[in-house]
Image (cartoon, rainbow, N blue to C red; front, side):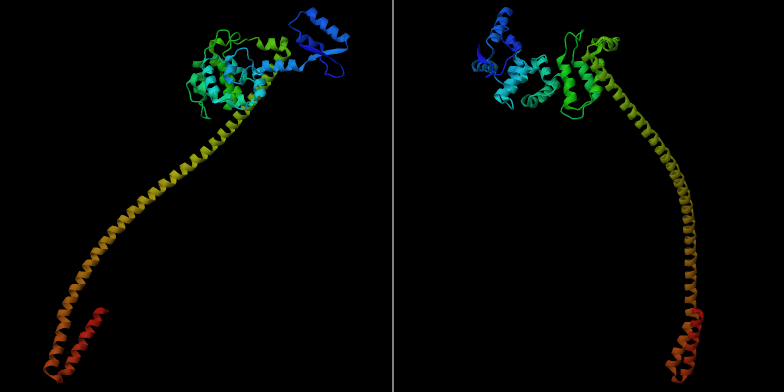
Length: 358
């Protein structure tokens, strides 16, 4: 439905827009409308009624992610417009549960349409990656919740769980592409590391076109040509980076070898010192043992000398000192006038003791 407005009061619509609007009619009818509009110095525009009808058609779909997955005719761009109209920030729990069932039954085309976009609607972005992870864990039968993933195990799982058709260019395995995208976007695995393993994962379904570079460089379309140039440049950059890292590793390896040689020399010196100390210890042990024996002998001889001296002293006391003291005592006891004799005997006993002590 259209109405006519003067050129001054409305925004002008081009002939192409008018042709698109009347695409359901014949070409002759469209041309007649265009000529009529030109003659009347006016343009054909959408009325408010037309816009309301169009808006009603756009909003006849509910803003449910499960509906987007189930409805093949509903494109992603149209679904995003519906989300914007309804100002959806997050999908309902019931809707997410229903979508999860559809994902497991889906060939992945709709999910691939989502994850392959450069920028996603916030509601879709907050929903899709967790659901993709859960579905990949179910399909690959591995835990993807950890930040560190066993890369070799991952490659084997991709190879075992994804079946590729004989003509990969005619039928695409969407979930394989989704898994690659998820690993790069959500686990920060380098794209080139994965790309190197793609031929191995795809197996016989991957056939290398030996003339691919010639076809693209010589006769490829501009977009193909630039993509090929970017890939080659990126490959060269990675190669240079790997060579730099390899040189760095070699340098570190040489440094570690030198340090290892130094440590081995130090170890040898320490072993020599330990051997010398062991010999010295053995010598000291022998000397100590000899000293112990000598001390034991000296102790034995000294003990014998002490015993002998004690015996001689006892003999002396009994033979020399005791009689004289006894005699002096008797002198004093019997006759007081023998005091001089007693004193003399006592002095003599003291003199004998002094000589023995010296």
